[in-house]
Image (cartoon, rainbow, N blue to C red; front, side, top):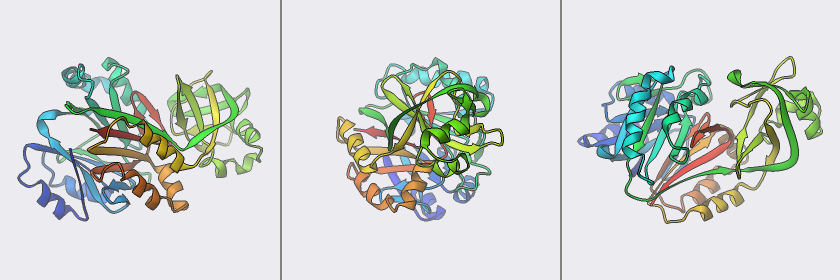
Length: 343
């Protein structure tokens, strides 16, 4: 797998010309993706972003991505109705199911709030099969995101990779528990709404646990998402908005009767150091997906340059994008980096 980065569409098309036996997965802002989509060939997969990660680090103007032999990847279009594309997804998975190095890259529509529904399509997939995914962005306009297979605009897409080299899938949190629990008393997962925590209206209890006024709660969402423990791992859910009835809308579904933990920031460079320690081999290629909320935090604190340099120590053969949500195995989560390393 080989990463690439260009400053304009013409340079991209010069690069892909003659590489008909390769598949090119391309990430850029929605204006570039729309323009590229008009001329894209079937071996080009396009996804709009809210920023990119390249061999030079974080960018908001790049056209980036990676190329690989078409013989190792199956491209499966996914639809709003999951059952519609299920057989193609199942067939693609069956080809790689017995390969411990195989993985799937899932690119989801970023505005429909259907990531969890999309993941139901993967019920035939073993829970230990590697799935790395990101929800497409639109440069923080929050109107419409764009995914293409060639010149055909699609709802979402899954790419199954038949790999020979070892692969490793990791996620990185830059938040840690505060030791304060929020039991979900009542929620409506379908619309990502939590009505109450600990038997108290959600916003009232959330603010009380933080020791702040309810009216100030939304100003603390960036620093204090909540997390759910599944096994030994912590999966982050980001609050989006406080509603008039003191319920809270989140960026992912939260079911009633689950226990959530209030989180607080930790040093992102300590988190990154731990991520790098978890790599069991020297990677030849790294693909990463970064939550837009992490990116906004890094921008506000001028951390992207240092963080990029640190991450690129793994290999310069890297690419990735800034997403509106992340997928890790069969989970949809927020405020996280998911990373796929290839030996």
